[in-house]
Every structure is written in C-alpha cells, then in structure tokens.
Amino acid sequence: MLKKMLVIALISIMSVLVFLIIPLVPLRAFADVITLRADNWYPYNGEPNSEKPGYIIEIADHIFKKAGHQIDYKLLNWARTCKEVESGKWNGAVGGSYGENSGCIFSEEELGIMQNTFYIKKGAATWRYEGIESLKLVKVGIIKDYSYGNDELNKYLQQREAPFVQVVHGDNPLESNIKKLLLDRIDVVIEDKSVFEAMAHKMGVLRDVEIAGTLPTDESNYVFIAFSPNNPKSKEYANLITEGVREMRANGKLKEILSSYGLEVGCPNRHIWLAHDLAPPLRVL
Image 1 (cartoon, helix red, strand yellow):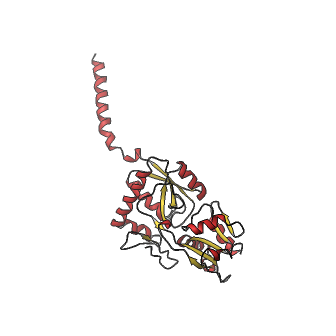
Image 2: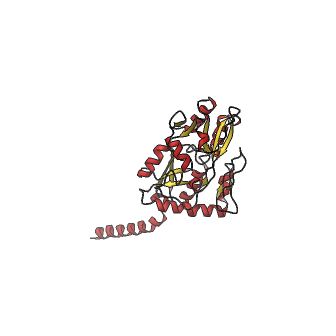
Image 3: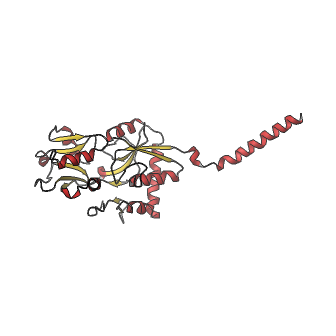
C-alpha cells in the first residue's frame, strides 16, 4: 500500500514539474519553419547561408526570429518559385510583386521598389528606349515569368516571338543574358537597376554596358515577400513583416542592414529607396 502511495505521489510531483517547466521551454521549439524561395536577385536576395544572403533575407530572418520562427531560404528558378508558392508547397516568394504574384498575400510595407532599366553593350549602338515601337527594332533578352512592371511592355514581351524577344530561364538567367548581350546575340537586356549593376560588377563587365532608358515606377514595381494564398498562416506572416519593418525603421535596424548593402532608407516618406553604391542614388516616391 505504501509503495502504491509513493508511486502516486511521485507521478503527482512529476506532473507539477512538467506544468512548471513547459512555459520555460523556448518558443522556438514550437516555431514555424517558414520556407522562402527565389532565384538569385541580389541585392534583394542572394546566396543562402552566405555573409550577404540579400537584404530582404536579413530583414525576414530578423523579424521571424524575433517572433520565434526560423526561415528556410533556398534558391529556385523563378518560374517554379511562383508556381510552387501559389500551390502552397513553399510559404513565400522573395522579390514578388503585385503583377507577378497577384493571387498571393502581401505585407502592407513593401521591401523595395524595382527600377526596370534597359541596358545595351557600350558603344555598340545608338538605340534608346522610346516606347514599345522602339523595341521592335532590337532583340531583347528577358527572364521567364518575370514581370517588368508595365502592362503594355509585358504584353509586348509575351506576344513577340524570337529572335526579337529571347527568354532565358534556369539558375543564373541574368548572367546568361549579360553574356548574350556582350556576345552580340541580343541587343538589349531589361532588368532592375540595382540587380543588373550588382551582377555586372560581379562579372567584371559593368564598364562594358550602358543605360539606354528606364521605365517609370509605380505600385506595380513594389517588391515584397509574396506569401502563398494556400497557406492559412500567410496573413499572419505578412502582418509580422508589416509590423517588423515599421519597428526596424523606428529603431534603426533597417538602416543598419541596408547600409551594409550600399542602400539607404528614404526619409521622410515611408518607402525604401535603393541607392546601389555602383550607381547614382534612386529615390522612390
């Protein structure tokens, strides 16, 4: 009888200890692993697990880690990223936009803004972008399933056949387009200014290209993490980004991260403006 009473007492004590210890277990043990995918689009996002994985990755990691979550970020070609995020296989597409990911869930705070720019080989031509008609005179290199922020331009690029529009895909599509440009296989490359110049600098060919025009920017150029419409937690994740960016802007953490990429936070408005250290500053709004 005594033995039975001792066992019952021991079980009771263990139950109390478990009840007391559970609140002390780090939330991370019960955290979400938030899966983020994108192609390499530096400085927005770059090589996973590197010293400079991209400023959006650093922002997301800071925000989600503070909320007790962790991110799983890997590179994946953009066409698959968009398709698989939409289906719910992955939680978010890094570098998404309203145009490319119209069915997805977005934060109220954008994480950047694209300035789509036309690049040509230096000294190779006098061509300049002067609207859609001017594109009909050249061979343009684009990336599969990219949106270039302008409905008229997107429509032209989707309908125009090779060789006037040449589409690349795979793991390093921008690098492929730059190589094609310098080999005279295409005449023009369209890309975000910061992304193109970061890649051209990495390849050592920045001095071999020049700008032949830019597109105006509006909300269709805003850059986000586009969260899956088929994940019930997407709104929660988007809200964490919204509140996190606002907090980081207020406490200086956003400025700290962007500065390490040669970028700056726009003041006094709320928008991030990109100023790659290889090019004149770009103010957004």
